[in-house]
Image 1 (cartoon, rainbow, N blue to C red):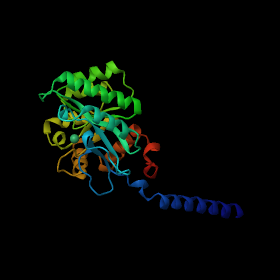
Image 2 (cartoon, protein in one colour):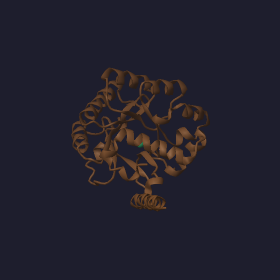
Image 3 (cartoon, rainbow, N blue to C red):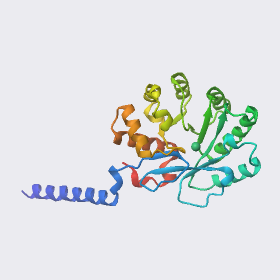
Image 4 (tube, rainbow, N blue to C red):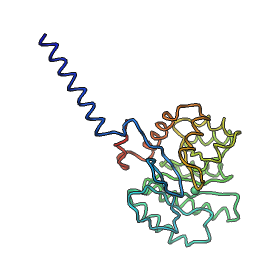
Length: 256
Ligand SMILES: [Zn+2]
């Protein structure tokens, strides 16, 4: 009798502890959606990585997560030395999560060798400050893979606004890239099987500079991948945690 009573007291205490834990951590079962790359901050419960062009630095807001780089479209229009100095300074900010967008674009007139030298400088800074790269890549995927091999880079390489075909996707995955999909990719029916090919631990979602909301991006992706939205949210949240490290980001409130 006494043993039984003692046991129920113990159970009550354990249950009470669990309730207290949930109260302290109400978001435990409600993870935020991650928007890996956006040009516009939206008020809400999501975690957003704002893209700031290097020429627009410094970023004075200390709470907003951001990434910064010299976009290949801006090469020749801005002073590269000033930009790289500003990027290095920004890299010391805790809320600066990644270097980029930066990258390679074969659809623009800017000399490709000039794009390469600029991109290499970004890789150096990313390595020096141990920050992942957020990459803009148009028709230069094999150059990108070559560079990743050549530099033996140790930091994660994330391709934003990803829009590649099946072969390119398999190749990039094999070489360790992370791929972030947005409206353009998700709304193209021919890309649905491509999206399904990306391993769960390599995928991100974003709004970029589009009008679409991150909610709609998640909805579209969960329909294409045929998985519950909550499963998708958890999956991408875990990828975010893996890449950016929860100790750096004070993400502990969201840990499951
Ligand atoms: Zn962008």
